[in-house]
Image 1 (cartoon, rainbow, N blue to C red):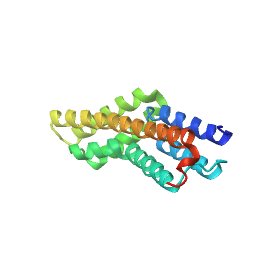
Image 2: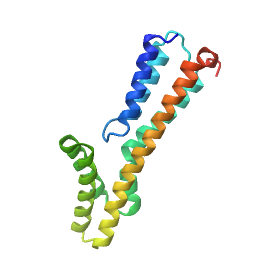
Image 3: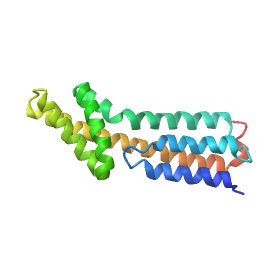
Image 4: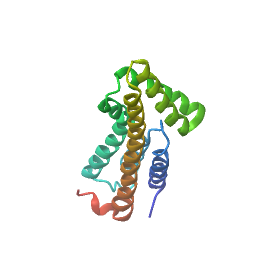
Length: 168
C-alpha cells in the first residue's frame, strides 16, 4: 500500500524529472527533497541508510552538474572567467524574460561578444560560444538522466521492493 508521503515523494520526483529539462530549476534539489521526505516522514521507513546514501550521492552530483556544467565546459575550452560569469548571469536574466530559448541564445551571444571584446579571433570566439552552449545542453541531459535514475530507483527499491530493503 502506498501512503500519502510516498505519493508526495513520487510526485516530487516526477516534477524533478520534468524540471531537469528547464534551465535554472534545481531538479537535483527537488529530487533530494523527495527522497528525504520519504526517509524522514514515510510510515514504513522502507529506505535503508545505504539507499539513502546512494540517493544523496546521485542527487548531489545532479546539483553540481546543473550548477557548474556549462561553466566547466566554457573554462575547459578556454573562455575567460569573466566571460563565464557574464554568460551565466545573462542566461539567468534571459530565462526569466524569454524562457529556455533565451538561455541558449543569451549564453551563446554573450560568450561570442565577450570573447570578441577580449580580442580573440572570431573563429576561437565562435568555437568557445558553441562549446559553452553544447556544454550547457550536455549538462542538462546529464541532470535529466541522473534525476530519472533516482525516480526509477525510488519506484523499484522503495515502492516495489519496499521493506525488504531496510537491511541494506
